[in-house]
Image (cartoon, rainbow, N blue to C red; front, side):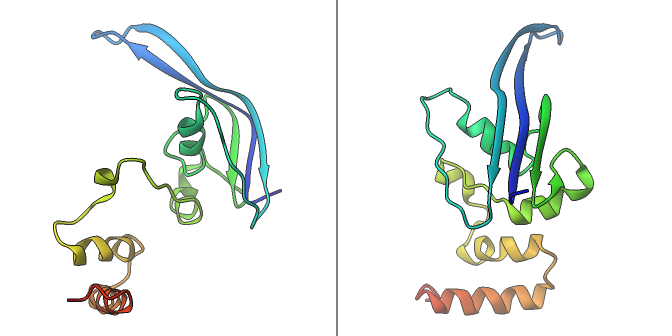
Amino acid sequence: MGIIKASKLAFEYIRRDEEGNVEGITRAVDDVDLDVKQGEFIAVLGHNGSGKSTLAKHLNAILYPTEGTVWVDGRDTSDENHLWKIRQTAGMVFQNPDNQIIGQIVEEDVGFGPENLGVPTKEIWERVEESLKAVGMYE
């Protein structure tokens, strides 16, 4: 099995009215099989609305399959016990840069990743300083 594998993956967006009744269903991903080996590069191409982002959101368990299964490094993405390990393996960069800014100042933004990995606070600030100096942004 590759680092990323999907088997018969399908996903449906369900539209509901104000009372919660189903108004419509859109099948955004339909019966996708995928097997990506570690170190392999792939491209997913298609028109707007063709399901590219929906597929990508399955690779780090932002979305869960309506049908089928997705594995990342041998872990089933629908198993919440594996959520953090999956997200450490398969990241996501969002299209809108404003959605990627976390902190009010650069230091907070740089320290966000290590904080979520459970790095102790003192070490986070040491890493932040070292990282900003390494890329010429410390001043």
